[in-house]
Image (cartoon, rainbow, N blue to C red):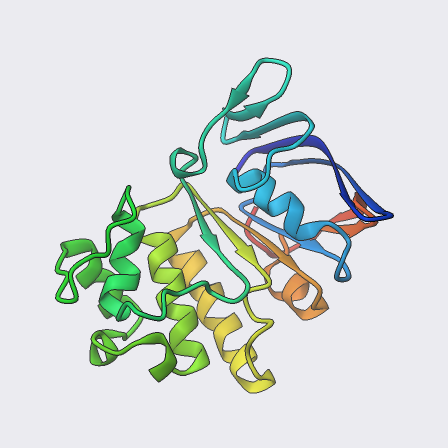
Length: 230
């Protein structure tokens, strides 16, 4: 993955002001942005996904300019060809597993059929061993199953890049270890570039080809790790 980001964004809430001023250039296929809560990691990730509009700067992914304030370029989120895994997975509680996954293929907001059927859906149901729970709803699933459903929804439309927002934060410690191993193996098998944000140093150890530390809205340091995809 070739990513080139240089953006600024100011947020104000009452008397509080937060300024994001992030610069990131990397050719690694596994990038981890590490930092404490409130460092600006999620804002940066949402800007890359097209969910937050920077005040200035540019965002380019794999040679494609997604945002450039000076050139009046702002590609809509649905056309950026990125898969986004939210921290809380953001599954629709009223849709079953099939519907939640196939929603990733929908361009509008109409709910898929409860008996949704698609070759890509079948592939991910099998890949993530979700077929036995395909007609269940998010509240009936374990934490690991919910994460797999969210990952399947992010991947079903064949994105060029996968963006992960604290993907293991909602899991208990034992499940966290197992799901790290699963995602690690999945990324290596699919060879899909990924950018993860996290406050857990173990995520950086497992996934970091290129690890950047973020503090107070800026990239404070970075490190290339030997032995990871790049």
